[in-house]
Length: 87
Length: 156
Image 1 (cartoon, chains in turn orange, brown):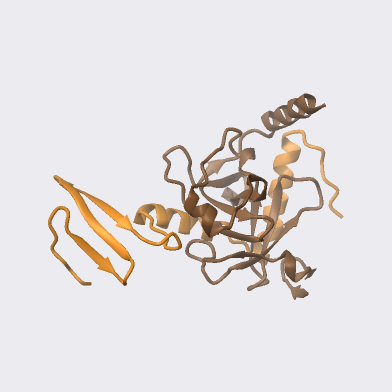
Image 2 (cartoon, chains in turn green, cyan):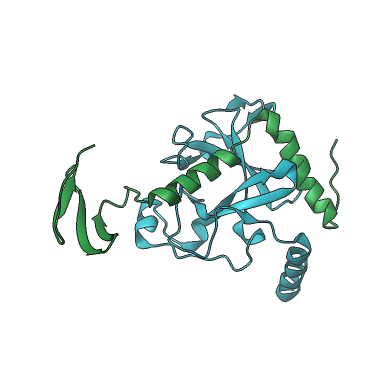
């Protein structure tokens, strides 16, 4: 890992078009400003991990598929839904 | 165009029906081309079938079945990325997870998939909001039904 020391208002440049600025430091909190092209997505790591995990949890393969469909149908029927014809 | 899926036996579709999620889904960048399919009934749930890996797919739904008040702003950057010209082109889907051996259904409202339906391109975004969760449980379908009925009533 590259380690750089920066002061408030100092910047680092990533590639040619991503600029990270240290805006403020308050105790153990650092406020960063990030300028990047719109096509570059920037996320807090913990949120990224959460969505990543959620996507994997949702990804279905054949073995899961029938059970998943059944549970949706069951939920509907429990709620007094129309009851589906599954042939 | 046909793909052989182990999930549905064989799926036939037009190439123009393919929705391209340019960066894939977060963490699953290898899957970028999808077909959005309806279930046989008029369910709020749909099936997002991967074209890149026919054995893979997601259940998705309109986010409002999880939260009737669900709303977020489409910022100019997102409009540009998806070439959105009019609001009608925008379709928002939540990825659905079946948990707890089918007893719990949750929707990812924090990381919605935003699609430009006319250009058939989309992206999964992450909302900068504490109001929404990636594991939002399905609210009671009874409530949803009542709401839908009253909506129909208003329109009539």
